[in-house]
Image (cartoon, rainbow, N blue to C red; front, side, top):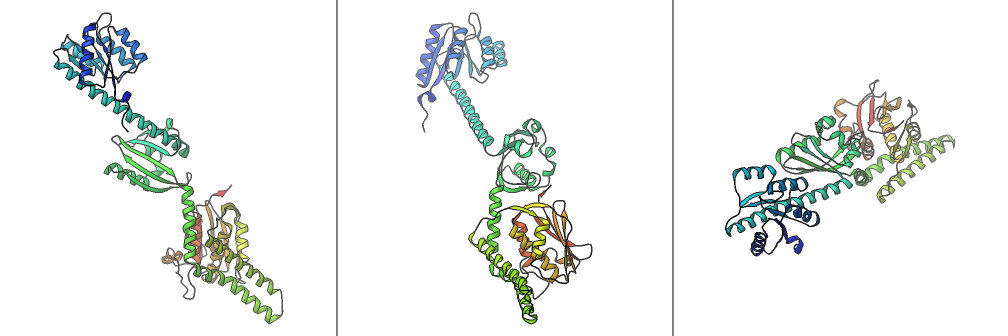
Length: 459
């Protein structure tokens, strides 16, 4: 889009106590470039009035004038218009005048002469006005960008010494640190927990290579959010723009979990249904052998569990939304234990706490951990208890060899050749969809201990 006539025009204020010279300057400049529009005034006071009431791109001023000379006028102009191009155009030249003009902030000092001096004056005006307009446009663009960042995303600037130079209100809300508290401070002293993180390494990479970078990173508790980060090197340091993608990341994790669930659909069904199916078959056989129909209650309960598992897998196949709910550790562990048959094994829930999770998924988690302790660990007692940021499930069985504690969560891995090896893989997937972590260790009795951490426990 081409500029409008007003944008193309260069408005010049010329002040000289000689009206004829004022007319001459106007004539020559407007002939040299038709964009120049010159307004002539004969005294400084009239110049001030014109500045207050009209748009001016630059000033041309004589030095020797009655009442107020050119340098005094220049100093007065600089108090109100520090960046306005100002040309001292005088017939009286001396090093003293030039020195005073430079000290007062003159743009250029030109001595009057023949007609060729008007071409020189016109060129200097053009360059000075172009520079000022470019600077103003850059400032406007930067202010608009900063305004946009203020409204939507986190944005801050650091210099090459990592000192914070700018901090918008989104960053203040995220971190709990106001702009007043961080400006002029070292970024890494303000956030020492950020040292040796991915963000720390990537920011230093951008600063050293002078190339823009972008990445996604998780910021742990207490912030507990996912961010999409873009960092751009500047002449002064680094500008960092971050967007909160926590919600989309959670949706992505759920989708990934569903996809993984569907990919291993047959394996999951065969594993999860095997246990309640064995319970149903065993109790049905006892009912037939003894004629005691009380065993059929166990059969019905096992059938209900299989029906629930099938419904749950169908929900996942259809992509139905999982709904978070408040979970009682004692209730979910006890409820899961009811589907497990182990006459030689007991469950003890040490204490209780409430946290948010997907109830049906967590029941599968506990069932698989319980069956793992019974079938692979030959445990006689299973205990469930609270950690400072989660919970544990441990037993007094044979335990897990140290060399296998990392690989046991891989799909298909099992120390038992007759087992399909999907139980702990399913547990790991359920932990992942909750954005928690799980580790395998040894219990005090030498059995297996699984610690699930990253859980926000309600006080």
